[in-house]
Amino acid sequence: MNILFDQGTPVPLRRYLAAHRVTTTYERGWANMANGQLLAQAELVEIDLLITTDQNLRYQQNLSARRIAILVLRSTSWPKIQQRLDAIHAAIQRVGVGTYEEVEI
Image 1 (cartoon, rainbow, N blue to C red):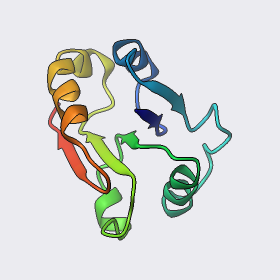
Image 2: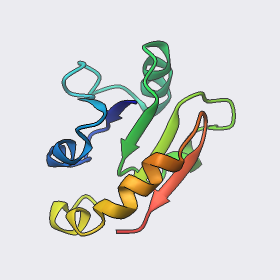
Image 3: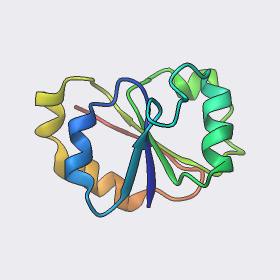
């Protein structure tokens, strides 16, 4: 699965997703894109899943026609996220085209 980390997603999480291809918005030069533009660009390059900590994304964007799955981590705290790795892995297994899911941290 091609996964994109949005700004705010702790990069150390990448080590725990070794079965996937993970890049960041910073690495792709997309760090300053607005959410709508970011989602469109990610879909163009066939990103399967955006992992973000932006809890307002679902209210700011019309996600119904999107082909990218979105997973929202409800915290930016790496120590707290580390305690929920099983829930994050389970959510990644469940997501499909155009789905939206949140993981409580």
